[in-house]
Length: 261
Image (cartoon, rainbow, N blue to C red; front, side):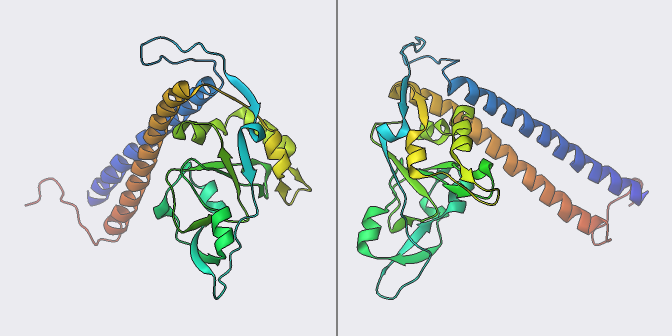
C-alpha cells in the first residue's frame, strides 16, 4: 500500500510536469508564429487611435543606419589598468536582454579602450564567430547603460543611429531572413565560422517606424515573458519532484496510508 501511495504522489507530479511542458511548447510556438508575422510586416497591429498601421517599412543595410564595431577588450588583468566588467560572448548567446547584474567577469583595460568599448542602453551585440553557423550572428540588447563595463573582443557591437524601440531591437535580428544572410556570410572550414564586420554591414534589414516598432516590441516581449515564466515553473517542478523522490524512495519521508491512525 505504501508503494502505491508513493507511486500516486509521483504520478501527480509527472502529470503537472507534462502539462507544463505542453503549455511551454504551445507558448514557444505562438511566440515563433508572432515573430514570423510581425517582424516581416505580414501582420500589422493597431496604432494608439485603433487604426491599423499602413506606412511602408524601411529597407536598408545595417551598415547604413548604425555603426558596427569590434576590437573589444581582452580577457586580461594588467597592473596599472582600470578594472572593468566584461560583456562576453556567452552573455550574448544566453540572453535576449543584457542587464548590469548579469555581468560578473572582471578584467582590466586602458582608459582609451574603456571609452571606445563602452556599453550603452540599446546597443545590440552579436556573436561574430562560432563552431557552428547557427550560433554565429546571435543578437542581444543592452537593456540599460552599464557602467564600468566593456564588450569582449569576441563580440561585435552595433549602435543604431535611429531611435529604435528597445524591445524591437531584441527581436529584429532573429528573423529567418536575417539568419539566412548570416549563414550565407559566415566563412569557415567546418571548425570555426566567422562573420566579418563588412559582412555584418551588408546585411539587409526591413523595419517599420518607431511607433509600430514599439507595438511589435511590446507584443513580443509579453510572449517572451510567458515563455520564461513557464520555463521557470517547469524547472521548479522538476527540482521539487527530484527532491520528493529522494525522500520518498529512501524512506526518509513516509506517507500516511488510508486507515492509519
